[in-house]
Length: 261
Image (cartoon, rainbow, N blue to C red; front, side, top):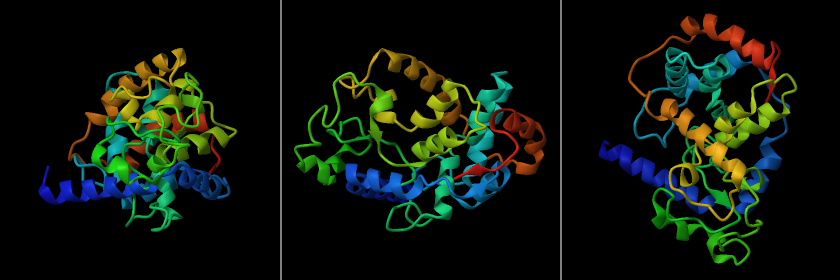
């Protein structure tokens, strides 16, 4: 990793840990989950040609390239068409930079509220978080409501009942959950919602909060992350060249109309 990239990534996570609190997540839900901005998949993917994820130390290409690389790897392994589409769209929540703000960390310049490994808000931050030395900067860790192992949650409540740090995963999940024409299987929605939740799926944290159903989720995520993590390269794809193959799959599972962001 180049030193300048390392410094930028570390600063990104410092801001992320300092600002992504329980109250911040509630405010972002209220602000961004309005579902009043119609945009079709083609236009959304085009906008990701303008975004480079500052939290990714492995790739400095526009984010749409990572999406195509993931989808093409899934396709090459003859995995189901819905999983290929999931690979193609799994980071599309980053489209929020189009209407985001520096103050929220959801802009092109300030991405700390949009990208990077996520954690649970409302309970103690685990040492499995990347750069755990920044955990103490989070104001919630000085609040007795939020700084215990279970925090505001019931033991064994399951991932689906937790509030994750606001970011592109949760945004896309909520947008698709609201999209009436969405017929992606549950496995796809799990992949979309939890693929950046590294302290859980890679760090082994939050055992007090997970349940039996989450063991299935873990296998789904580990399967998907082979394509999310290990397909990054400097190969450049033309979005138009792959559109002919993926467009019918997208219409099959998401319909032909716009998605409301």
